[in-house]
Image (cartoon, rainbow, N blue to C red):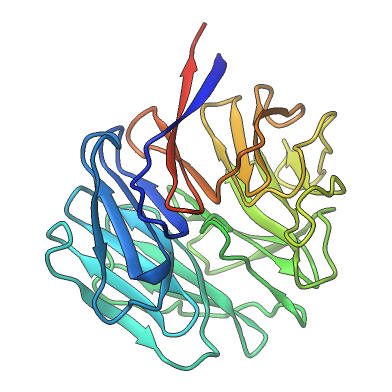
Length: 323
């Protein structure tokens, strides 16, 4: 498989687009600053753009799309809100909201059509997760013990990919700041395992910004220092044994990266404002695709296409061949 180019699918809205979710190769949702949400139903050829009333000053950084009709948006910042539409954006319902600045939401992920989580920064020194069991209509704090985090350990909402799920209850949460760790649960968050990583950490701008998971033991993490995006120091690692050991690539990414995604079982793409890189061997060697970067990258949930979203209203498609 050889990546050929990154093709622009620009909605041209001038906003910063971090939230990205592709239902299939045709239906794409992206969202970002100024309460903006964009939808395409033809693979990015045409876009419908909206600014959500009441959220004109909000930044929607996380999104999970179920279809061309149903999508859930999550703000980063104040107010902390979860917003739902089930009719393609004709009507929006705020299903959870807090105006207290103690709440800061970072990511959304689902196991199936009904059960999912929204991750927020720690509250009272403990992991904060909201749970839904009805497809996003209602949200409540995850019951049971919320594990403690270290002081000044939190999560990054840079691409909405600091939390990942796999069917059957598997859940990964990545941290940064004081420490760069993976919190791993096999049972929908009822019990947790804390896994240390060698990722750069110790300051507010450093840590794991994104995790990609292939299965229960093969994971890739990217991040670094977003204030120094060309720094190539402890900013990308992978594991083949569930985090028991972390391997440093023989050739790393070009610096800080905000998102990483599996394209298939062996191919990964990582992106950030400073550039985009591809690995064809599970994360051991990375090659630059472009010095132009994005905030987020997602493979279609039920398809093969891979999409990017970024600053200045940019959306793009990864063009590749299987030769």
